[in-house]
Amino acid sequence: CSSSCERKNTVGRMKLVEAILDILKLSFKLFKQSPHETEGMEFCSLLVEAWSTLWNATDEQPDSCDRFVTNGGLEFYLESYHVCSQVTTDDPLVMHRIVT
Image (cartoon, rainbow, N blue to C red):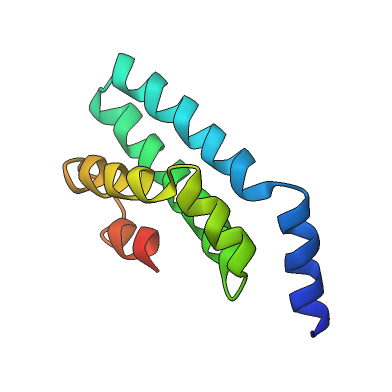
C-alpha cells in the first residue's frame, strides 16, 4: 500500500466519513428550517467541500465506502443533488463539483 493509501486507511480509522455525514445531517436540518436563497447558495458551497472530502476519503477504500453507504451517504448525496439543483448559485459548476 502506498503512503497515500496508508493515509486514507488512517483517516478511515479516525471515522472521518461518519463525522462528515454527521455534519451533513445537521446542515440539512438547519437548511430545512430556513431555506432562503442566500442560505441555499452558502449551503451548496458547504456541500461542495464536504463531498470533495468524502470522495477523497473513500477513493479506493472499501472500508470507508462501506461506512459511507451504511451511514446514509447515498441518501445525503441524492438530497444534495435535489437541493442544489433548485438553488441559483454564482457558480455554474456547483453540481459538477458535487458529483466529481
